[in-house]
Length: 207
Image (cartoon, rainbow, N blue to C red; front, side, top):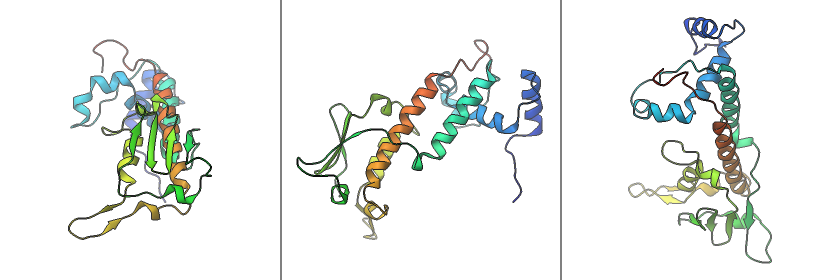
C-alpha cells in the first residue's frame, strides 16, 4: 500500500521556512492543523467560514504547542472506543448488582437528571457524577453524550417497520456503560487540552 500525504511539499517548505526548523515533518503539520482547528479563538473568528469553505490555517507563534495538542487530540478521538473510562457513578436499584439485565435499552429516550450531572438510561440504570466539562465539547452542534443518547434508543421505521435495536450492538451488554464512560473521558480530556492551547494568531487581524 502506497502512503499518500495530505500535506504538500509546498506546505512543508512554507512551515519549515516560517519556523526556521528543517526537522518539521508532514505528520507534525497534520497534528498542528488538527490542534489549530480546535482553538477557541480560531473557531470564533472563522465560525461562518468553516461551515461553507475550506479552512484557512494561520501560522501561529507556537508551532510545537499546537502540534503536540493536535497529536494528543487525534489519538484521543481516534482511539476513544478502546480508551480510558471516566469514573462515573453507576446506580442500580438498591440491593442489586450491575448486570446485563440493567443495560437493556427501550423505546423511551434517556433523560438528564440534576442539571445534567446524571443520566437516566432506564428505570433500572442511572449514571451519576457526570462532570460539567463533559457538556463543553461540542461536535456538529451536539456533545458526544448527546449523540449517544440520540443513537442508543430502540426505534421502528414508520414506512418499512424495520426495528433498529441497539441492544444487539454490544457483545457484552455492560459495554453500554463502558461506552458512556469512554465518551465522558474523551470530552473531559478534549476540554482540558483545548483550554491549554495558546493564541493561534500572531497579531490581531493576522490570518
